[in-house]
Amino acid sequence: MTIKRSFAVLCFILPCALAQAGSRESVSSPAPAVGDSWTYQYTDVWKGVKGNTNRMEVTAVDENGIHVDVKRAASGALISTQLFSPEMNPVDRGAMHFAPSFARYAFPLAPGKEWNSDVTGNNPKQGKNWRYQIKGKVLDWEKVKVPAGEFDALKIVVEATYSAQDTFTKNGSGQLTETVWFVPELNNFVKLDYRDTDWQGRIYNRDSWELTSYVRK
Image (tube, rainbow, N blue to C red; front, side, top):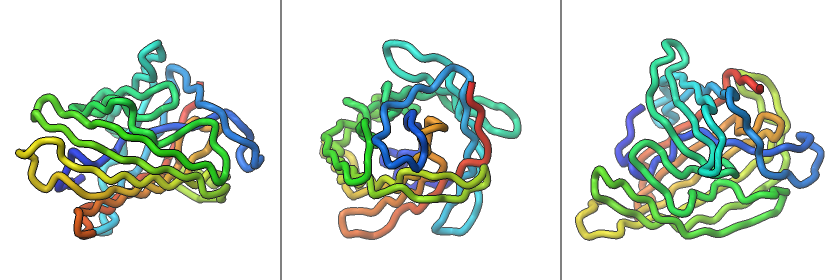
């Protein structure tokens, strides 16, 4: 995967909730269990090229949140460990730490719900900090087809304007947009489209992840 501004790319794997898909009822917080996993095919949409297929597996659930190992699907090689909040919002993504968690979801979810959140993204290894102003909205239930099958999903759009919090971070402002198709009974999304633009609206990244298989314990 080629990322020109890796600090802003949120390419991690997130979940959802427990409710009957397509029931039009509100969706409560997710409840992933140790051993649950989701395997995703990454595609560089801009270039029209498929990249790696990675598996995300829950290794622990405790007071700190949901702990996940990210591995190559083919070899099982460990790529990174990640931490999510109890709502499966990103907290730690490799070297990046979000405080509070990056609000991709705000449970309970239902069509029409909206939320706002201010988040700080910190990369201690690089000594860089960013501020994210997040706006999320649930659009509606939608049927979506991916390699793992066809699902009834909640379609969610999250937009975040971000800016560097120090004078040394170049190209540190812009806007990212995630469109997420989220299936409650899988405790995760089945598809995620990502776009990242600079402050002038020029696109830096267009990426997609689609579910190819999953395991529920």
